[in-house]
Amino acid sequence: MHRAAIQLVRASHRKGTGSLALNLVRVTSGPLSRSLEETMRRSYWVLGIVLLWGCASVLKVQDVPEVRLDQAAFFPTIEAHTDAPILAGNRIDILRNGDETFPVMLREIKHAKSTITMAQYLYEDGAIAHEFAEAFAGRCRAGVSVNILLDHHGSGKAPSDILKIMKDAGCHVEYFRRVKAEGIIFPWKLLRYNYRSHRRILVIDGRVGFTGGYGISDAWTGNGRTPEHWRDTNARIEGPAVKFLQAGFAESWLETTGTVIGGDGYFPRLEARGDVPAQIVKSSPTGGSFQSYMLFLLSISSAKKSIVITNSYFIPDKVMTEALVKAVARGVRVIVLTPGKIDSQLMYTVSRGHYGPLLLGGVQIFEYQVCLLHAKTMVVDGVWATIGSTNFDNRSFALNQEINLTVYDRAVAARLEEIFREDLKYAKQIGYEEWESRGLYERLVDLFAFPVKDQL
Image (cartoon, rainbow, N blue to C red; front, side, top):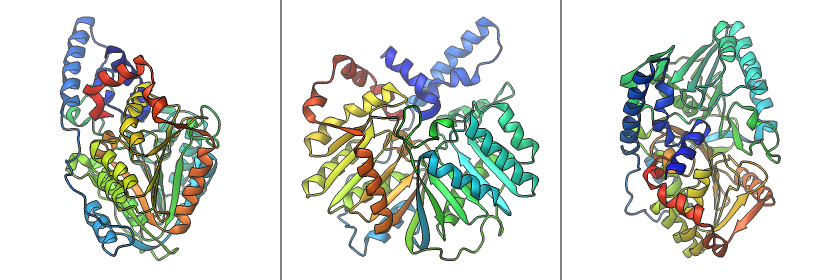
């Protein structure tokens, strides 16, 4: 268990796992005397344990209605349980990896006329981080209002020179749920430290939006087929759905700054830009809402033909596991693609520990081999699809603020299924016998990780 805890701490920066609570020791430490520092460290470990055992699970779902995708009641049911309208008239472009994503984002940023908003969990040092900073700064100097919200845990190590580039140009840069600034600790904020903003939002002039799983880091550059460069899927959005992507930013910005954004620069009248029905599902579990969980559960339960899931942190709870197995039992083909290489050995081991019931139930599981798979997509029956920041784990469903784009469109779904098939060429299928024969160390780590599983 001690080794598992150490691994969890090491993995916390990018993933944002249960070590968030444990890392209060690091976050709140300062240049103190040795005896005082030791006393404080012990106090923070106690606080960390309290946070780990705090409320960290979704509402228990006892029964799910039998509403299929081809039934008229499907849209109203999804809308009701995700608190998100499904709007027609959108254009959705699928962007793979940094090679396709970053050039398009930078082009839109450089053409911004009035406003730019960005919420980002991970902003690290590197060439692409500097390029984004310079692009934001350039628009600020041109009179564009630029509001940037970085999660304090995921982006806490963003270099000061990058922040200075943006701030000196007049950009508004803030940290979400910051507990320490210039050596000063804010004790009253510690109890919310474990609840992060994992959202990825970029909106230009209130008209063009981006979301997905990307971070602003050199790890996301490349084509997703080489080591050290992560495989991800993102989306560019135009049309009425952009308003609700902006609303996701506005919610977190208001909490952080007390400032309400509004006006034509942020919320212009949006005309139809395509023919794709889409919705933006934002989840804020600390406020008692579990929209992402309900989106995934209802989508899985609605399937008649197929479910293909790509997810970087795949740890389904009992209800989700049963929903996937029940789908197979009613004739649905269910295929899950997870990472074979990951930034947290503990996460990988705990995820694999959940394979058994799924494999026995007929779910096909593949592990991506060439690099870290970070994409978070799901396609149901070749027509209903979701792309976003939500991992298939309790941290995303019950702790983090998340945001997902969902679409009802055969062309978008077909593109995501095509990408899925291409990814399978670089993946290894895991059978039940192979899973059952995993080593003693892997079994022990999974067994003794139970105190922190709700934080994963």
